[in-house]
Length: 358
Image (cartoon, rainbow, N blue to C red; front, side, top):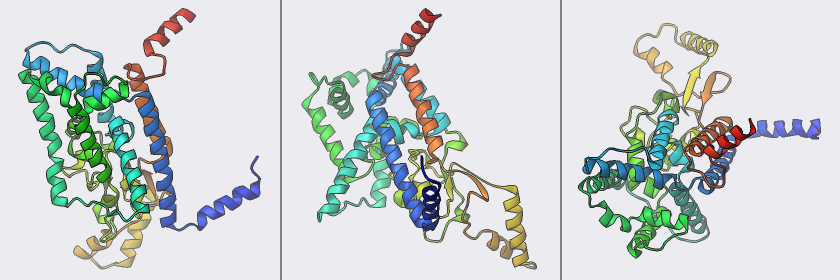
């Protein structure tokens, strides 16, 4: 049992931290939590990426052959991931995709090596990033066209994600050496730039980026409340975007939450609602500060940077541990029901056991 004195001293130590130190502490906790969840999904559901994209290829192959699309296991996996993404955003990409986890691990290992050596960081110019970000759409269209034309089977053996799926399955026989070379090239890109594959090459990510997402699962900011010349949200974003819901690039967001954790104004959240009493008090204080100022002057006062605090705002920043765990358990339950998990009894087996017990 923890002594009251130690609990009190722990709270006092937490209060003694500066706002920047608390943000750094919370961001570190969030990184470790996310890593743990990524490892969990890598072990229990590593094949969902390959399975879901196999469904995309199957659908376009059937369209090209003018045949019906049957509800196969892969199709069920794709529909389940798309439905989850519609509700919770690209949580799958940020927390559960095996390919994304591989990229994060490779990049972090290289960053650790780079911190111990004089190896410089490779910086991609913004213009190049914008161009390369369109490449995944070209990859998606190219594969879909090849499937419709009925020629994808000729080239599928050279696919790097086929090689990755074969490694995960422990069955590499029959996979072309070219596929492993291309996988190695992708891995090199993952080492040099965070989320290289997700941002530039992932065809399933291209599908996700075009999907609508419910508003409470989109990271957004009030630009009027941003600190001047800050930009920390974009600096920490692994896919280099601003958390602006009205931006055409907003679909690129992988819901990792790092932008929210980095914001010194607590201005990047999934949900931010100012409490009525706090808002009334703030407006009254602003009115008292410039009682006769109207028009542009009043607008300027209300538009100043505003730090959001939990006592004045209801904030759901997306990195809240309970909310992260809720999404994790929900996605794991979805994978379990559609039969996409390993080492767990299948949903159908559990139903049989329950039936036998009753």
